[in-house]
Amino acid sequence: MNDDQLLRYSRQIMLPSVGIEGQEKLLNARVLIMGMGGLGSPIAMYLASAGVGHLVVCDFDEVDLSNLQRQIIHSSTQRIGQNKAESAKDTLLQLNPDIKVTALTQKLDSQALSHQAQQADVVIDGTDNFESRFLLNKMCFQAHTPLVSGAAIRMEGQVIVFANHGKGPCYHCLYKDDAEDTATTCSENGVLAPIVGIIGSIQAIEALKIILSIGKTLESRLLLLDAYTMEWRTLKLPIDPHCPVCS
Image (cartoon, rainbow, N blue to C red; front, side, top):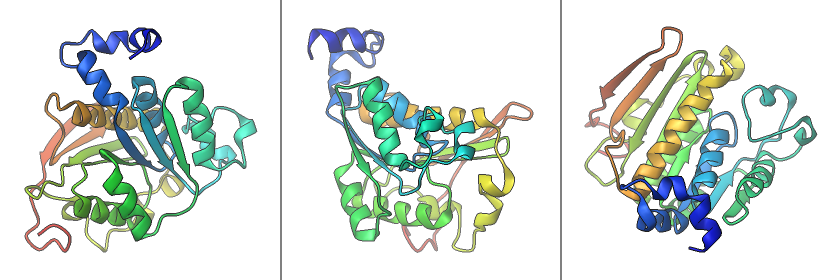
């Protein structure tokens, strides 16, 4: 690391669990973030600020006015109409020009997603539909790549980590094929803006812990937030013996 990097990341390097060695791990890490919406915004911005060396951000959608209420990575109304991954890349490189950011602007098929999952040290799910989540889960399980999953709606949110080392559950153990997208989308039910910030920030923390091999992650533990009462719960997720992906 050069002098500027030592200064930029000094508050992290001071932590005994990080230090110079840990910061170098972050600088050498590659993270795939699926979705540059409400969750992907704080995830990507915190990982860029923390010095994760290569961020691959994927989103084929375009910024619209309704996104700006919560998708803070798209920093102005001038971004409306721009591809979200490209918009995110612009913001991230302004935050930290020393990192590498790859913007994927097309919807990934299973082959392309498998390739990206195999290259990543961690994959973070910031998508908003079960079709994408199920495919991402399957590709990460096959690639043995840790997956940090999050979701937020109304005033509720959840985070869970799937280590994908063959000894724990996967996302399909949590939700089945008949899960209803219409019950879980912000466009149908709304969301209070800071909720996605809270959940996305936790996803970013979990990704950093995985890269650094520190602390206790949310592996196979579902963290639930009810922001209306500001109460948290943690549930242990068992393996589904009939899961078509991981059983």
